[in-house]
Length: 363
Image 1 (cartoon, one colour):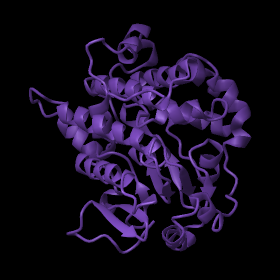
Image 2: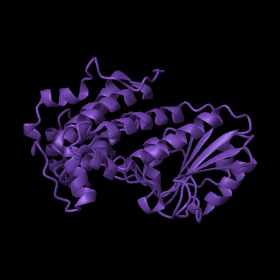
Image 3: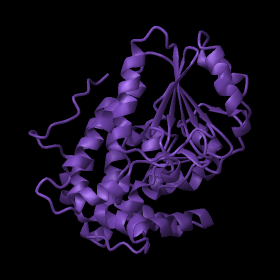
């Protein structure tokens, strides 16, 4: 990531040109570069302009500060919106997601090389602005995750599509637990392409600017090194065996029956998550894989689920417990997996015919 560019008066998204490289720097370091609606709009406008600008041959995205590319969306704003009591409560969040998911699709189909420097924390919305790019670079400091079930939500920003394409049941494990991936795990699970030491990122950016006429992969390859092995490949045996179940309660039971400490820890994590969120997340990821949905169609489905969960009690409660009051003691409703029926889950996963979508064209 870039250092020393953040100032109190600077825009929350810095747009600079280095030769024929268009450089995006997310610039909210105190908030771990969390995305708000204005940032999404500014990034979208920049990409739309650069897509047709012959003077821009390549785009790269990075984050200001020392801690990460982006920790996700601004969930405090979503909490305020959901609990405002206004007649149009939730409208601002729905509008944010609509533009954010369209941005994710724009990144995936961007006509020029899009290089994401996924240094440090890359979670939720941070995954959405990086892992759909052409060249995705992680470092030894990378911590990549879709932790939404911890706040009563579900993986979005195309996360269900990425997780559904991970090897075996690794994506199911990551989706339900919200577990973090190291660089090695992110490479193994298809969230990243190359490992570059964090100390080499400034030189990499300089080369991208100098070599914008050549393939981005070539510039990255000059700095790439092997990543330390992740833990997930060796855990495939118990992960695949446990998460192959089609029911969250059965997954937890299988985890409890395993001898591995990591499996028992995963069970303990799942027992703290929103029961509704867990069941909806399992259904959403399995649907993408079963139907072979394109990224665009997965984003459309996520948009409906996100709006439906906004109207449920668990999202506001999860954000309250984790980031507002920080008591880490959410009171989920319903409180148990048994209380969440198949009909309840279907209501989140079935899109009403009169529900407006994102207007994306499936490919």
